[in-house]
Picture 1 (cartoon, one colour):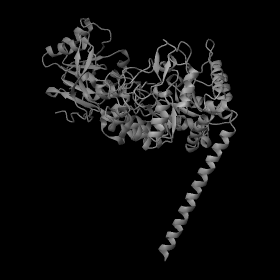
Picture 2 (cartoon, one colour):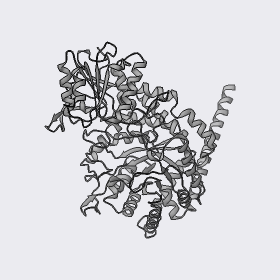
Picture 3 (cartoon, rainbow, N blue to C red):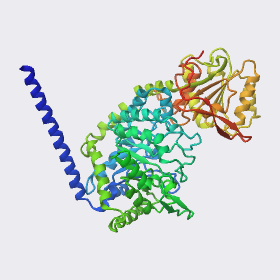
Picture 4 (cartoon, one colour):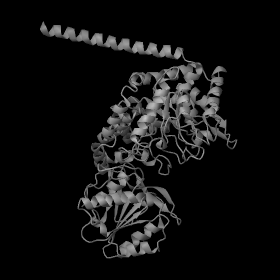
Length: 632
């Protein structure tokens, strides 16, 4: 009898709880509907925009504070959000202040709706906040073979950007990098295998969500199999719908199934899927509507076929793929009618003594309102989009919790979290696990740093030199290297017969070449050959970008892949900035740790032309999943 009473009470509690949740959900729905009913067309359109305070006409200056003019435009329009780029972000306190000022201005507008505050913090190659953890990057994380590490990295990134005041991250990249010639995705993708990408996309989402950060899968329906960059051109893909379904769409479906709240479109033509055309304003040639403007792809494929009902945001509308070919108002109207909810960077908002683009926003808005009033853009499209945006803001607590803490408390929290010793140490350890050893002839690695052997390090350019110095200093502190026996040379633009290089190589026992291109550099090839002329001389290739250069320099005695050539980070002592993956790779080469990574992509063999240009062949040289796990 006692157990039965307990069961009845528990059932009653559950019923009441469900009723309360249902009532709250219904109340929220009613509140959203009432808000939309009280909005003007202009306010709805503004809510469908994420704007940037970006740069002057020369792209040399960027806004780092909310000026009175920016404050006024945020009050005037009820923008859905703002995006901050690297130039907007100088340090922690400045970032917190700028975000809070944006939110304060937005909440002082007529509707007072807080902003989505967005950035591209993918980790690795693309980071806007460089003074905290930057992560080793998507392909490096996939090389660990451990989705828990991807989740952990995303969790750290999420903690730090949430502390600064961001609530939306345009990540993870969900593209499948199955075209070695892809100029813009590359190591930003996890893999060339859709199943591997799917697993890590879901893990990344989970890590961000732990910090109440909304994620955005990008770039739908896939940017990994094109040979052109949509920042500078309008790519086209000949893939059919069936081909997309078998590969490119797989990670996006996995992300949708995992609860993705936003998806970013790709400015790519798919003529086998979207046949509607437009006459380019650039050259009057006919182009197919890219995915961003395609009702067939956004509504037909993404919403109806794949069952997605979250927010769809465009990639930046000021990218050349759109800006060079389409009238901006036509592009906005077509994207909204296609089923897009948010226009990203529709107008570059910037003002200084020489540049003032603020009036362009007024003209843009006026013309869009006219398109709605004429019936070209349906009011129902606006209502549906604003409802999705407000729903997300309610669900994430943006409507109620924004600026709940004082600026002082928030900045204190930032100092505890952003770039913390715990995060930086863990970032280094995760990056260590990504290092992938493809070749180690005659036990070349680990290199001996304390036996009197002379080492030459060839760096790709001057920007790599601080990282090399940091790694060498760290190795010396740890007793793994006598730094006095190391010569570092920047080989960018250097001739092979230069005295500095000839003198260094003639006495070198060990050569470390940093490489980040599949095209062959003749100097590197000759340097490897020259060191091999020395008694017992060995050459190590550190692949810093896509690992395809492993097929270019086959004469190297050892090949270690790091998956990231740029970026900055700092260690717990404040040393830096440096490139995490390069620093870890150098330290790994001298035995600080043992490589554990596995290739996330197939490495094709290459044919090298006389000018060094690499052409990828169908033959696979190193298979996905390969990686030596022991030095010997």
